[in-house]
Figure 1 (cartoon, rainbow, N blue to C red):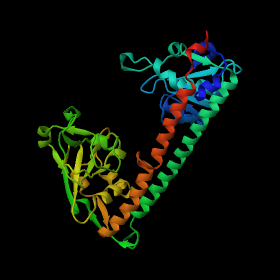
Figure 2 (figure 1 turned 90 degrees about the horizontal axis):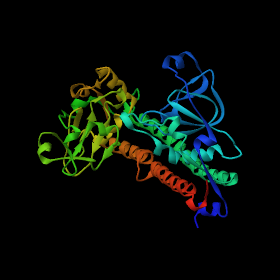
Figure 3 (figure 1 turned 135 degrees about the horizontal axis):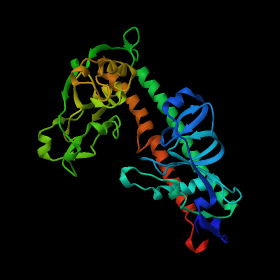
Figure 4 (figure 1 turned 90 degrees about the vertical axis):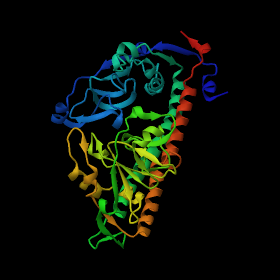
Length: 399
């Protein structure tokens, strides 16, 4: 007998539509200018999912209490949030207010809708939508109030555990950023981590080769390992032993080659942060890369990983910003990358710095170990129990 069966033993479950148990509203139009001119302490939520949906804060609020909001339009349509307190929402956000709190617990409704709402999203005409006339049709199970409260308490515990791990991960990442800056900074005596370092340009300590070609349409199921520039800032971390894409041997012949220890650097992006991101290739099989990327082939003076970690520092970022060209599409050419100065300590010191940063990198980014793995396991556990606890049997329904 599972947890849900135990909770529902000898209990009846009534079903109603969302429109029967809650009031549904939409937010109002708020421009960027309005948000700027009315800055305050009360959050404004919109269609995005980043930052818990918050796009700014204003000096007034439209709602005060316990509510749910959902994203009505765009890629995140059907995403549901639990809100409590004073806030406002924009016109691409919907509001759900429970009519009778003696009938249904708002947080219980939230957990149910996180499963069901996405199923009602309409994706016609290329713009996903979940409007009031659709979401109001969702069937809601209504077990006795004490059962709802118990289910909420269990799921809240899982949410709290994940939140604690996420907060710890955020703190560790800040700690990692701090130590990386310290380990790769040169003091006024010309020392890095207490060891003498010589400033050299990237062009002096390695060869830079600009890539060419490689549209995604060239990808194959198997073949020669291939690194696409876009994957460096959307998928890969600091280093990899294998690629997620491949090309045919015929296509690979036309592309620039990436060998073990080489560093692939992004040249182009729509934002300056993604320009200059680096990936150290540690695969045994030769790979290839294409346009909008430069291959840095380190000399015997510098480790590829040491350089890759250096590209994550403010010292590198400040030089990169000065060399960047373009507004809508930003580019730093291979020729300009070669001008960037980097402190070069002895190889033994580079190895020590890399070993320290590798440990932080594993702890904060690895999906096979460290905190990200623990968070992933907790999220899977939460999803499993949510499905179990909210899977109400059809033979136990009152219509």
